[in-house]
Image (cartoon, rainbow, N blue to C red; front, side, top):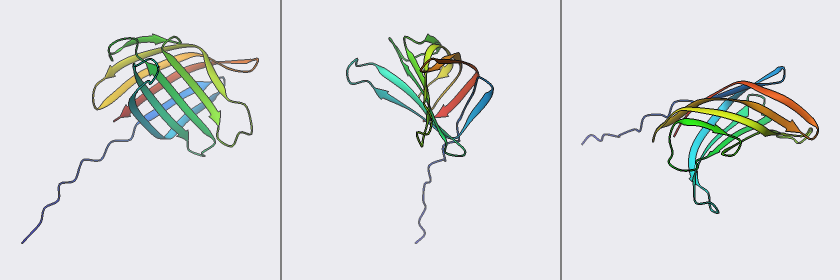
Length: 135
């Protein structure tokens, strides 16, 4: 008697990259997932990544004010952070943010982002941000 196994197709690798000041950050391990916020009761897209040397943790969160749909979102709906995993230096958090969510469905989300991140008194421009994640 032969047995058959049904293997689920592997989820493709996502990508998450941006330039902060003069340095380009690229995640080599990118995950995306949807969650519900406990307090606000709204859907949130989380894009999570770690640089290839495991030095930095990158995270973008978009909390949808209404329906989950493509569109442009700002710092009222989104938060971007870049943190040093070993806490040897301060992290950055978004001050201004512009996220263009080009597509989102039950399997993937894709978009671009730009803005300004701060670390204490230091402000740096975030440019050339792109992401594509699979659920």
